[in-house]
Image 1 (tube, rainbow over the protein chains, first blue to last red):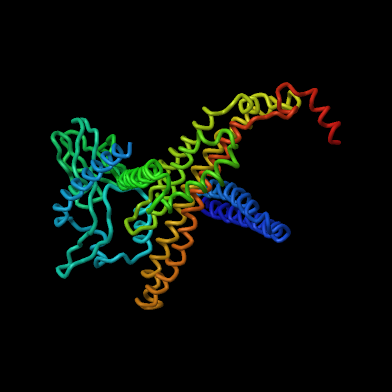
Image 2 (spheres, one colour):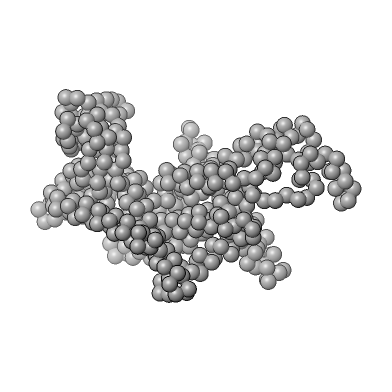
Amino acid sequence: METAYNLIGAGLIVIGGGIGLGQIGGKAMEAIARQPEAAGKIQTAMIIIGALLEGLAFGALLLGKN
Amino acid sequence: MFRAYLKTAFFALIFIASATAKAQDQMGDYAYDKEIESAGGKINTKAEIDSYIDHHLKDSHDFHLFSYSNDAGERKHVGFPLPVIVWSTDGLKFFMSSEFHHDDDAKVLVNKGDATFTKLHSKIYELENGATQINFDESHHPTNAHRVFDMSITKSVFGLILIGVFMLLIFGGLAKQYKNKNIATGFGRVLEPLVIYVRDEIARPNIGEHKYRKFMGYLLTVFFLIWIGNLLGLTPFGFNITGQIAVTVCLALFTFFIVQFSANKDYWLHIFWMPGVPVLMKIALIPIELIGLLTKPFSLLVRLFANITAGHVVVMGLIALMITLKEQFGVVGSTGLSLFLTLFLSVIELLVAFLQAFIFTMLSALFIGMAVAEHDHPEHAGAAEDDIDEVRERFV
């Protein structure tokens, strides 16, 4: 039973991470389309936020694994 | 200076080479793995694949490249052993891991002086006095053996030494070129843009123009260590250095202590007495900020560890496709599919290898930058309850 809860939790984490990454990526695309000259800066900021989100999602997955 | 580095590297190389060469003599008599042997010398089932992947992710006492069965049905392993250095009840012991004969289930016993060692699940145990065979309780824990203090040169330690020697050589060379010719030549031309990239894209914007120089040494070291470590993980030697949680914990601790010891008084003020908020809020914020201190390095270490581990698991899983899909697609089809998918994933892993090194360095720089930032705004300058009204009037 606990395994089932773990799996559901892992699924929820992945859904949440997916929504977050989608938001970040989508908004970054919009921003680059509006201001192509700032593409480099936007990309860096995007990667940092993506990494922070990823750290959170991986942390939750790791804690949920056991 | 460079000459000194070179000497160190030379002796390290000689040590490693002699240790491995000595061990290679003993390689012929590797015993074979009974469990895989019983399956006709092949890894066939899902459980075997799982244990194979698990074994790869863990650190081990030898390099195992591949195994095969010869015509006589004997199981042969190809790889090379590493030195085992343990502190037992009989003092310091040094021997090669080949003496365990590839055993990982505590079947082979190694006698050294008064101490008897055996290897169980990549961990070295010392048998209690007089014991001639290891006994287990119901949950498969040994009852008459205990763990020893293990200082062995394991696969990851060997990899780290390799990276260290490599970095000393290439960056020592680069420094020598700057000293002698004032310009980078040869391989130095590959390194120079990377060093400049770390300086101009990571250190300068995040730490600030005046303070970044002091931290360049750490940032460059950690960047190249993680990057080369990640790339080594993509070679067929089966390194998994940055996928060991001990390694990432250590790196994150470095960042943590550098941040704490280089922090200025504004940083501590923001933790213990946040300016610009009511007193009750200041007290409520203290525990939150203290937890924030710890979550930063924690997220750093988990991100690197989990990313590399996930990458390795997926690559190994795709390689295992050639076994699991053998029935459906035939040998050629499944191998081709596995090769095709693994190739593409490896290209992505090359990107991830760089990205994780970049992210770790970038976030380290960001945390250091937050700790050394100068605050000259009125609402940050100390006891600021009166100032906040002023600011509010100005903006609202």
